Image (tube, rainbow, N blue to C red; front, side, top):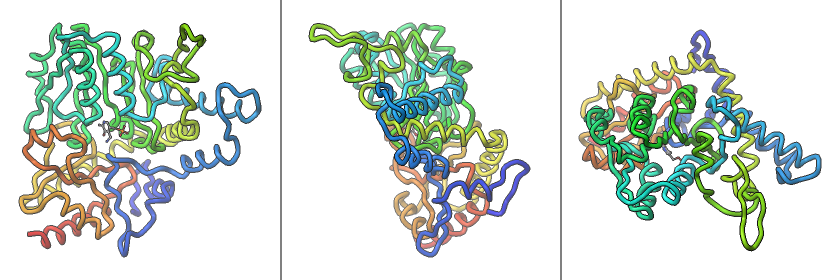
Length: 411
Ligand code: PMP
């Protein structure tokens, strides 16, 4: 704290996040678990409160003032998200529960409409379970086969193997932009282009990207993109599926019910147009609106300054871990987001996490929903510190001192 870069006023930024200003026991909270979920600025919290206090009503169908106001706010939020990711149109921005649901919509839809026995779905060895299991389920129903691009020792993708694995049989390439457990930033555009040359559909997991740097869906060119609101300073229970218009139109609906229909008879139902075809039932109105407020918040920041600050934090965190005897960083890719995962020669990750918690330090320990990746590195899990722009060098230095004490206790 007390630090001020040219354009990033950390004192004022931290004041925007009320949760950060508290003690856990005797110690100030040090929140290093942003990969799991980010904290929410006051404006997002107030947006939820304001909706329930002043204009709660069901949207789209209502013929009264509050319903109109809610519809305008919800659709206004969709427009903000469209601009945030540079989508071509707002109808290509589907509100979902989050990244996981977005993957399930696409994988289950493609299993019904596109995949055939013997087709190949290519993912990578560093995927979150959300980008593994839905495809395995799609393989079960369609007879497609799952293939995996291996991960190198430094946590980068084995691009030579990727070249070999990509073929005319590849019908889907789905992979993570930024690895939640290693921090690796993958060469997304390059891989997408290679797959598209072979005629494959592409899907990009942007869960860990959108909270750190600008994601331009038109520039990346993926057919589908998924992310979660709660990892970009917005609420839980809301996220986005973006898709190219023709791909979304070709994809069958995920759930049936109200809102997603054009006309229902007992003989036959016709489906609504985009985006409503994929938004069955009453949507998560309050959180959808508040996600737009999170976009406003991110866009009020100097994003270049945010990236520069996060890079400094990454470098300091890397130095701290590298310089402690018996610790080893898992994931040393050249291009990394502000994540440092490590293991100790002497201590189990969960013991380290539990003891760090005694000093008010929130880290993640375990497999980070990437069990195959942990198996690849032959480890039970890691201790992961995942940093956001509101974290400070002072917090990292305090963490370093506490980590010494914890390592001393466990050696
Ligand atoms: N992919 C990645 C890379 C993630 O980090 C996460 C969340 N840890 C997910 C997918 C799943 O996101 P959610 O639980 O919000 O659906």
